[in-house]
Image (cartoon, rainbow, N blue to C red):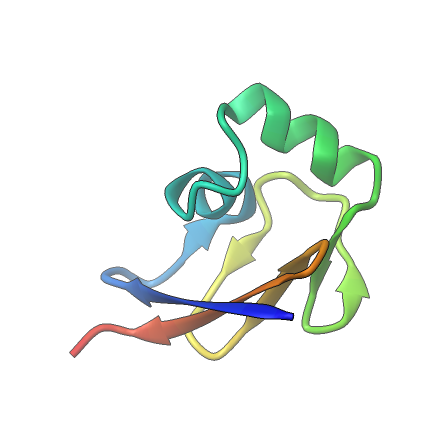
Length: 73
């Protein structure tokens, strides 16, 4: 599994934005479809909420990619 480290420079990022910022999807529309179809896991649990708040310390998985969200600094 490929791991991507993402530095969070605020309190949280919405799930659909995180997928765009890490270039796992090409658009917000694509992110909404992928999340809605149940392809994204947050901390090992399928997440269907597109605007779910992702905070430092959480892990997001899509296919064979794992995003580790870390606090900046």
